[in-house]
Amino acid sequence: MTKKNKSKKTPAKAEEKAEVKKEEKKVEKVKEGWQEENNNWRFYEHNKPVINWKKIQGKWYYFNKDGNRLSNTTFDGYVFNKDGVMAENGWNFINGKWYFASSSGKISQNKWEKIADSWYYFDKDGIMLSNTTFDSYLLTKSGAMATNGWAKIDQNWYYATSSGKISQDKWEKVNGSWYYFDKKGIMLSSTTFKGYLFNNSGAMAENSWVKIKDTWFYANASGKFVQNKWEKISGSWYSFAQDGAMLADKWSGSYYLKTNGAMADNEWIFDKNYNSWFFLKHGGMYASKEWIGAYYLKAGGYMAKKEWIYDDTYKARYYLDDNGHYISGTYKIDGKDHLFHKNGQWISEVSKEVGFVKGQYSKTIFLDPGHGGRDSGAYYYNIAEKDLNMQVYRKLRKKLEELGYKVLTSRDSDIDVDFVTERSRMVNKTNSDIFISIHFNATGSAYSRASGIQTYSYSDDPDYPSKINPYWHNHPDRMSESKRLAAAIHSSLLAETGAKDAGLLERSFAVLRETAKPAVLLELGYIDNFAENQQIRDSHYQDKLVAGIVKGIQKYYAGK
Image 1 (cartoon, one colour):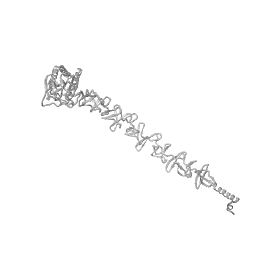
Image 2 (cartoon, one colour):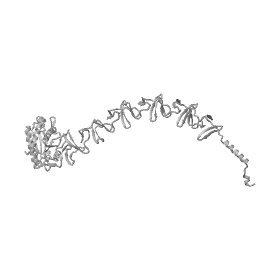
Image 3 (spheres, one colour):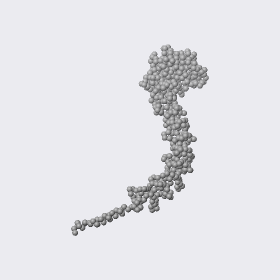
Image 4 (cartoon, one colour):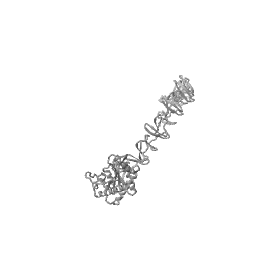
C-alpha cells in the first residue's frame, strides 16, 4: 500500500470524530457558581444566572433582573459592600458615604440612631449626615451630634448646647465671652450687629479695636461700637463715621485724622489732596492766620510758601521761601533784591548799600522804635520804654503815610533788633532820606525830677570807631544834614508840646555813627519822672509829640 492510501480516512471515522467535538462543545456551555461577564459578577445555578436574593456561603447577595450582582450601593433599605455582601450590624463606607446596618441588614434611614453613646442622623437614602446642621442639631465631621461645644463647618462656627441643639438667633456666653449666632446658627465674626462689634474669633469686643476688611472699629466697655462721634482712646482722640468706621487720612471739620486714625495734635501734617502742609495745634485745631515758628499758616490752615503775606497782628509784610520759611536779610524776588529783618519782616526793596546825596530826596523816612523784644529799655510805673516807643512810632507812621511819605522801619512789632549795627545795616540798604530813632529818657534815680526833650545828632569820637560805616560816619554833608534835621525837629517838638528844652545835643551813639543817612535820636521825655511818665503815656500828648516831629521833618525837606 502506498503512503497516499495509508493517510486516507474512511467516512465512518470522520463522522465519529465530529460527534466527539460536538459533545465537547456542549460540555463547555454549562455554567455553575460565580462568573464574571462584561465587568459584572453573576451566580449560576443549573446553567442559569440567579435573580433576586441569594444566600451564598452564609452571606446574602442581591442580583438584579439581568443577574448582575449589586455592590457598593444600596437597595430596598439594604447596603452592599464592594464584594456585594449585604452589610449587617455595623458601619459601612461606600462611595465616600457612611451607612449603618442593623442586625437584620436594614440600614438606618431618615432617622436618628444612637451608636456607641453618640447620636447620628441618617437621611432618606441612609447616608450619615456630617459636617452640617440638621433640625437645629450640629453634626460634626465624624457625624456624631455635638453637645456643649464648638464645631466648624464650611468655614462657619456653630455652638451646641448640652441638649445638642445649636444656638440660633441668640446671644450665648461661652468661657466668659459673649457670642451671637444668626438664624442658621452661624457665629458672627469680624462684623457688626445691632450696634455691637465682633472680633475675628467671634467674641464680642469690649474696650478694644477690631479690623473688618480694611476698616477699623472700636467697641466700648458695653460692647457697643462707637458711631458718629469722637472718642478718646489711650490718650488720643479718634473720630468715627455713622457706620462706626474709624476715619483716617482725612479732615473732620478743623481737625485732621492721621493714617492710624489718631487726631493730629501739636504737629505738622502734609495733606496730599491739598498739596500743602498744615499745623495742628495742641487740642487739634489747625493753625490759621498765625505763625508757627518761622512758618505762616494762612486762612484755611495752608502753609504759605513762595509768596508774600501781610500779617495784621504785626502790621508787616513777609516773604516765605520754597520751604515755607520766612526770609531774612537780603533776598532776590522776581529779579529784585529785598531787605528783611532777621525775624522776617520786610523793610524795603534795595539794589545795593547806599549813602545819600545832599538835596536829593525820595520822601522815604526810616523810623526806628528803640529797644524791643527782650530789651525793654527803661521800665517805670508799670510801663516799658519799648512800648511807649512803639505807640509813638505807630501814630507817627500813620501821619507820615497820610501826608504821602514812604515809611520804613527797623521793627513793626515787639521783636529783638540789635542796637549796635543791625538797625544801621537795615537803613543803609534802603533809599531812605533820613533816619529817626525814637526813645524816652531815664536818669536811673528814684523819684527823678528830670524832665524835657532831648534831640541828638552825631559827633565823632575816636574812642568809638565805626564798624560798618567808615566812609559816611563823619562825612561833612551827613554831619551837617543830621544837625539841620535835629534842629528842625527839636524846635518843632518844643513848640507843639510846651515841654522843657533838655538840649539839642551831639553824641557818638551806635545808631547815629553806623547809619549812612542824616540821623537823629529823640528822647521824648523822662519815664522815671512820675508826672512826666503820666503825661507821655497819654494819647493826646503823644499826638502833640507826633505833630512836632512831622513839622520838623517838613521843615527839613523845605530846606529850613
